[in-house]
Length: 535
Image (cartoon, rainbow, N blue to C red; front, side):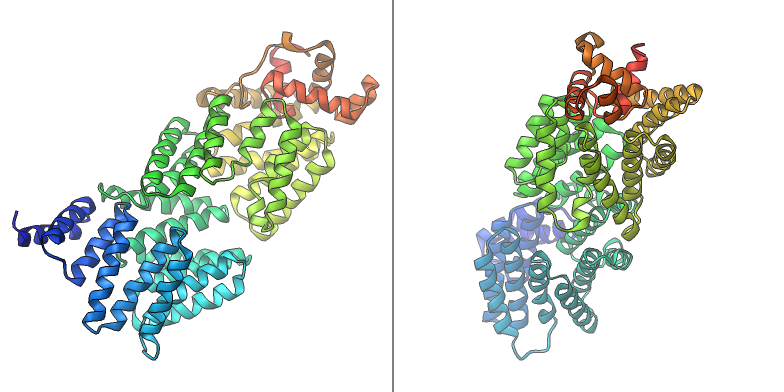
């Protein structure tokens, strides 16, 4: 094929979003004769979208020099800014800073949109360092510049950054409104391909950070459609699959979630995104843990950690299932201590309630449940509300306040149902069954437990536990006594008084019970006791 034909076909491939073809054809044309600055821009974008950032940077550098030679300082600065952004995202902070400095020097004294783009690294640094008010002011300034120059890419980037920062400042509704506004430009096709992918992924991540799963579902579906229209796209597809896996797990579609998470890990590593690959491994571990495949879960969590992703709270819950409650408590306390922002703590708090109750630390569980309830008052998203109701119900049940537990758990079940989260809803119903039995309503208890068992059977989980249950014969005589008292609704303190032993000893027996039966809650242990006719 002649060079002119290569060039024409490469441009057509680019216009049709056939990124691998465009990259190959433009690269071949470039080898025969150096490309123009505009065509180098197409090559750089194609390289970025197939996950070849080094080639993207080299093409942008050459385009930058060409614009300098043509005395086009604004366009040269624009290329320098994107070189800096690509390098910064790859961790090369020093070289990135150098390119930003060069871009600033080129446009000093000029009235151009590039001044708005130069605010992007500033606001990102401010956000990462926790200077949220400063980041918000910078994003607002960038938005104003984008509007003045009618630059859709800059406007979308600045608006979505405003949304992320407003959410971190506690102004969640305002933040979500900005994210939605940024997404209008994305779904209408107004943005360049790279900016489209950036905004898609960042907005979805922002929705997850504030537990706005309804929006996350909507935008993930839109991102999936965008990716599917570009079969040769590599960048952004891995992150899309991670989001899909998380939502599929919540929906109870665990085999599909596992497949998506594995594909996500492969795609993320292909595009050198180790953090996202680590998140994909964590998602694999979560599904294995819920299905009771503990060794596979441990391997996945270890892989997530190696890739730079904190495997909590999943690893702590795995340790609890293995009968190592002290390790679970220590891990969650350490993780909570490292997370100062309230919304970052929210993913850990439900697990801490579960682990604290398993070790008899009712005060610790109460404090974690209260913190969740305070979060709901500030950020009333359905996931947070359901988690808080679940935690309050579990604590009330452990304290022997069955009427309070009944109200909280019924609310939790209703919220999980509306979220479309069958596993969590079934766990709430199982706990409801135990409470109804404590209140003397055997018919209601049987109906709640039967409904929960049906869901667990569909999911492949045995009676709501994340691990396969042991047999009653595995328990010691003392453990059987404790189990029967738990099934009667007694708290650890009441059990200690009844058996004339310490609460610490009761907590140790509870831990052994959970490990042997493969359960992680009192309600699941109670259901097992009744199923095995131990009470």
